[in-house]
Amino acid sequence: MKVAIVGGGVVGLTTALQLQRELRNVQVGVFASDFDRTVSHVAAGIFRVSSSYSGPTEKITREWIQDSYEYYDNIRKTHEASFAGVTSISGYMFANSSSETVKSYWIENLVPVYRRATNEEFQLVGGNWKYGSFFTTLLTDCKLYLPWARRKLQENGAKLEIKKLTSLTELATDWNMIINCTGFGARSLCNDRRLVPIRGQVIKVQAPWLKTFFYGELDTYIIPGFNGMVTLGGSRSFDSENMKLCPHESAAIRERCENFVPALKRATVLREEVGLRPHRENNVRVEAEHITNGSSKAILVHNYGHGGYGVCTAPGTAKYAVTLAKEMHGSSVAKL
Image 1 (tube, rainbow, N blue to C red):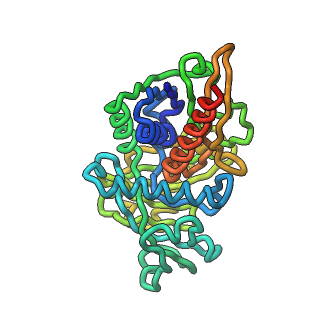
Image 2 (cartoon, rainbow, N blue to C red):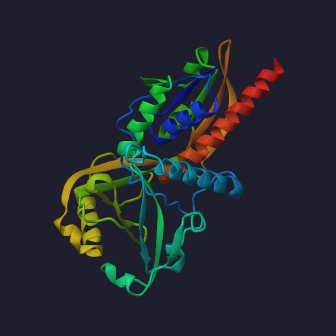
Image 3 (tube, rainbow, N blue to C red):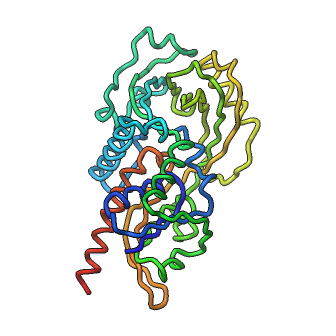
């Protein structure tokens, strides 16, 4: 069987890895318009899933999140962890708006530590906060994870190709199965008007002394990564496709983060980045269907619309997508 994965970000590459793991005798091709400039590269990569994140059912959503956590945690425990960019990290969420803001419905019972912040811990940051939580979770740095994933795929025989598609049916003549992991690109490829971009802008700074992450009301975050690099954010501009850096937004992010953690005033700015999170109204789409191109038929599995939680939940939706693919393939073979 020949399987084409479309999408070179964290969802596409993780789905391809999962496919190779479960179906060892398939020929895998990964197609993307760009492997080096995806929204995954902008993400801080912390494993924190908003309560608003949703799959088709609560049960399936929990499975996606648990499978994802176990996937990254298993990598963390290996000698490849530093090469794959996966590590453990602890930190705080503070808020004044509501005690619910510092809770995490999906991961409170999944991560090893999730507790209220102590009175002493409120003094670690600037501001007079009412509510706080401390938890330990995982971090996946896509600047390391994505190259690592590409190497693993190629070592196992996958072909990676730069290709701009105007329709997914183009691949049906040469591939038995297509898995669509195109993120925001699915809006045009699938005519999916439920996909909405949520623009985000971040600043990457050098602050090697910072080892702990901090959130303030979710719209201000400070997340350490590998090699002393820290992500400062953020912004969420609904339905904006503007990829230009906004200097006023950068100034606002720096002011919020430096008021929150004053030591950041001495951090060196490395770069500023913009990305479009592929948010899909109602739920992430992981579904299967049959498509045709003339006399050619193929199985098409969709896996997109993760919003700002693509890094967090890619392994779980990948596993689910591959299961759907195997079921569809088995059903097709049975009909022959």
